[in-house]
Image (cartoon, rainbow, N blue to C red):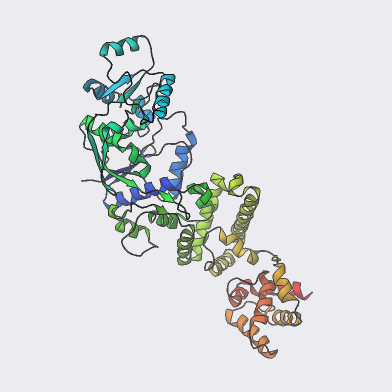
Length: 515
């Protein structure tokens, strides 16, 4: 069997983490088995349709490294791949007519008021809520013809069989059964002639020869309707895989309160596609061992539906940062600079880092913070245009201490400015000590006049001063030196950063504190 999976988003908003996980699973499964991954746009709900969403989905998934074998942007043998276009092409018409002819579907003419009255009656009498027949399920052909002749608007509903057990075998949960008497008759064709998800998605899955449907577990409640539809056609259904919900660290369903959920928001924070994909794949799936950082080919080879878990997958933001940081430390400075440049280009194209931050996500204060981080990153890239070698040295020193690409802006900032902003507490603690002016003057005069510096020369100068002035520990020498050069008490190795800053910068920065 050739594996064929589909990612079928509704273009009503932005691509979020839950949808990304589904398409990552699709992608890994298809590639593992040499199959095809299809993009299908389910845009039948025209009231919620957002024309910008589809392009963002495609662009976001391209950034994430997801490629499709068929879809509206690449074509394929089952075109068109937008359901609105498939409806206009008449693809769904013969299938709904077949259901009407065989008695598996019927027209229903209730008005909105009548449906509201039906629901209220069910609620008052504590009955199952939904459309279980009403007047039209068993209406005579003459009654239907009369209503149609009078121009009454109607929908077409699936006739769920009664007194029957509906069965679905789910890869994760095994055999699931429903009493058909508890399942309401779903609408297949709306009053405006547009097919609903329940109808169009299942017909398309059959016509596009989809072998496996991976989707969120929230669709389990709709699954018996889909089973009944496949039974009505006499079609073999695809293999269903209902993936577990994603929860935050508090065990509740992932939402805005847990932080960003839009995929490109993670790009804006400096997470790279590979680590994000790696992290997302591990939410609700296990490779069968304790591996957490996996290259693309490792993920493909290890992925198996059997590794999917029924329990909720936890979104651990700290783990995402750890994986991203681990990958950063495995990259060369050249690769990292290229990745930062790519991120900047994406940012300017999408302009997402300039978007207004809602109050529940930090508001104006968070917006200011984000802007400052991006300004630092842009300075790094501007500096690289005039002194690429120097910036690469800065990146190499700081890659051990950052977890995202955006972090490089602030981490490297003290290398790039004329006068680093000094931490007041650090100044108060270290720079008022009596020996500091002499320390800085000694280091300036010994190191500041050379052509270039090595790490060994910088270390020798610091240790020589400590020995000559009776300092048994290096702290009182190292800390004020670091504050004078960086404005901070923490950072990369002091001797390494002194060598990278070079003689001229050392001279200027020491002189600033000597007066």
